[in-house]
Length: 430
Image (cartoon, rainbow, N blue to C red; front, side, top):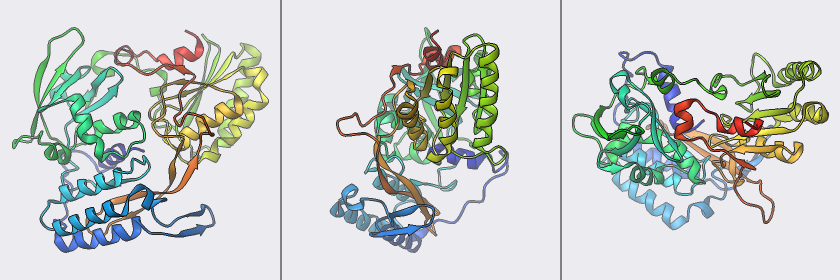
């Protein structure tokens, strides 16, 4: 799960606004010095270790000295150590985030907790489409901005903010940077750091709706648990099928109009209430019934919300579909920017093992990249440091190092405003 989504999920789990979180005391010079020492030792640990489930893996960040040239890393660590107690907790946190992100490994990151100034944020949810940054949800008092493009945030244009936030987001592709940056940008700490936040905790933002004139609103930092209206509520847009059960591990539906058997695979993890092998048994029994009674012309497996897990979980579905290739027709895999880690592996497996046609937008990480993550928590600042312990080569020699769909069908601003699903439409031939 992207860092900003994990933070928001944690905030929402803490209850309703009006129940303030207990903020820890400042970390202080001694606390930061201890944290920095532990960070350097664990993150840069050399050598290998072995455990029963994971097999051999790196003790610290894999290929540490290749990704973080020693002279650069040690110079920055010395600077931060000398600044301990002088820089604010937020600035120290951002400095570590920037240092770790400098290797541009999407799995490797520093996650700030729900303290310092990473808790308060603008009560907006924004998405970067190919044709602009758009407000998809907002607190009631800012509902006028829903469905509008963001032209400016304070003194910066939308594109300038993307460039400014980029160094703090470990990204292997532009797709991942655009996916994660909006969530980082709304935090009080980042807005303060970029000089976009006024003393009144407000940011002047300029918006524009299709066919309308630009307008400006002062948006104030708020509790992230503040209720928001979304584009579906305000603009009465029908939600596309793939957003109907985003919290389910996996589910399926037969689409009679196109004779399509649709499976959404959101997590490469077994649902505790329904193991994936049992889900596949149920789904295939239903698919067989529809094939006999109505006909099934294709199977669509939607991976657009799949952020990873265990690559082995997909096995029963691949085996079942391979045995029904003639009965159920060709397989299509829907992919997008949030198809990540083992979700990306699943897309590759579908293409390689089932000759699936991939539809959607490019991947958010490289095929040859680092993963198999571990983490540790710094004792004083409570920052969580996630690092990668293995290198995976997913592209063969001479192949592109990025997953490019066979049929491009990226989501657009216009799709979001009408509830259209261009990727699904392309797969079923509409």
